[in-house]
Length: 70
Image (cartoon, rainbow, N blue to C red):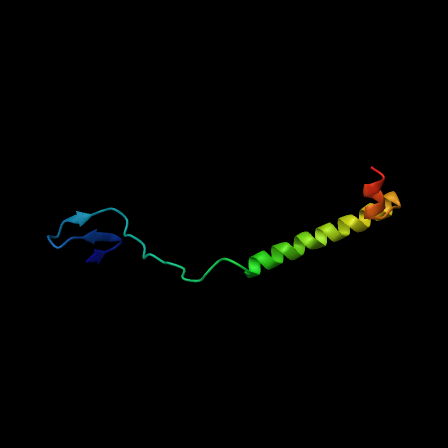
């Protein structure tokens, strides 16, 4: 029995602790090609691609040319 946020047991004794929330279990699998993983991979790939273009513009060499000059 519940009354205004408090619980009362079968003997009528008041339990002034909070009512326990209902437990929710997510049954969906979160491994593999999830939407979050795909967005993150895409964004990281775009950052890498733009970085390579900026490297070529700033140094005047391609990535392989820049790596072989080190």
